[in-house]
Image (cartoon, rainbow, N blue to C red):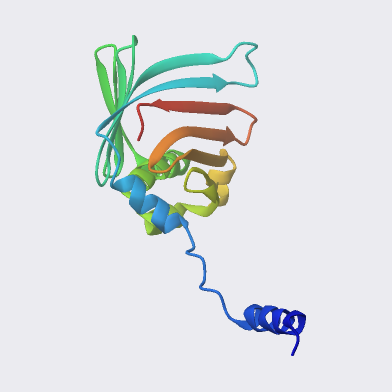
Length: 189
């Protein structure tokens, strides 16, 4: 056999040898990594584009998360805060305080779960409310969430969370009426 023939035979045999499967990076791995790296407090800036306003609304503040389900959103300069724990959201501001059961507002529950389940690394809970699609790779990923419930989808079209590695950087919420809210997280999540 000539050296050219041996090279061809080698290449044919090499093509038949199964290569080890590449490790699949999936939503469960992403959420587990995020859950292990979430700081208790995260500064944010938010831009909300409403269909009926010419100028976007902006705000800044802080998110606090304590697994598995305590989430607080404080809005800087307004004195407003929203605390979601268990099955209720407590709204505080201007000396008033009220509590709203999440079961009465399916879209609010779904939005709350999009954050709480993601930060807690709880894929089954996230999948209870959304279809979940992960795009990209560890260095630059996007997690697309689409509501499973039709009544929620009539309010929330989609939520996209994106980041790098174990850092959640951005949350984009698209509402069915055309409003878009973009939340940029500072200092990592």
